[in-house]
Amino acid sequence: MTILTRLQQWKESGIISSEQHTLLAGLSLGEPFSIFLELNILLYAGILAFVAGLGWTVSTWSQQLGDVVVLTILSAMLAASFWYCFSRAAAWSPGETPPPGLVFDYVLYLGSLIWSVELSYFETRFHLLSGHWDLYLLATAGLFFFLAYRFDNRFVLSLALSALAGWFGLTISHWPSHQDAAYRQYAILYSLMVGGGGAALQRGGLKPHFFGTYLNIAANVLFWALLSGVFNREGYVVWLLCLLTACGASLAWGLKRRQFSFVAYAAVYGYVGVSAVLIRDMHDDTAVLGYFVFTGVAMLVMLVQIARRFGREG
Image 1 (cartoon, rainbow, N blue to C red):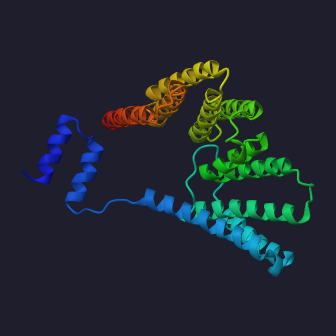
Image 2: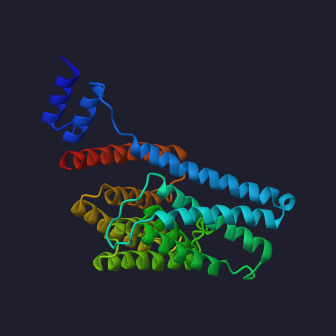
């Protein structure tokens, strides 16, 4: 039995989808296939690595190089990036707009990150706003929102939402402090504002394809906030009920809109929250390990089956 025959049988029995059959059949015949997504991810990761190295270099050698040299280099890179984007961008449109070139989005992302590095260096060295980082974060969020909507870039939109989260007080260093109710309230307020703002912009026809980015970020922040309440020693029942309600809403949305990510959010966050309550009073390490082995495998199998079903129906 040939590979193509076997693939045809799998397709007819529903094991693989038509798209998967086409891809696998092409691979078996030696036909070329696209690796655009993989290359796209690697390029964005490369930009992140480059800017991280740039930030390390600036912080390490700033005393030897001097402020003038550091700021001149950063400003030149920033100006070159933004000049390239503004000089080559197409006319603005409220709908989805393709980039004018292959490297356009990467240059825009690089310029946005360099802005963050230069701003951090400037405040660290000169204390222009006396350490009021919330004002810098708010200004940076405004700039990134403008760039994201001007050039139709969802990665820069994610940077804008991250800067806005920082302005709200959602810094990563505070997340381990599960007892801090203030940050939990900020997180819930942030997620509601982002989700509602994204929905309003979509309804208004302003870059409606951005709504998925708004909703994914808002959902994850909300789930983390509710989950942190479940880990409290007191009053966790209310937070568990809120978490399960949010999981139910995420599951319903994912099934209705055929978006597997929201089904996965409901399953994973719900599993973690329920597990935290069930093993709260367990003191036997073997029992805890056995619980996570069996339930974790069951959860993984369930998600794989749901993903396969989504693929067949898609």
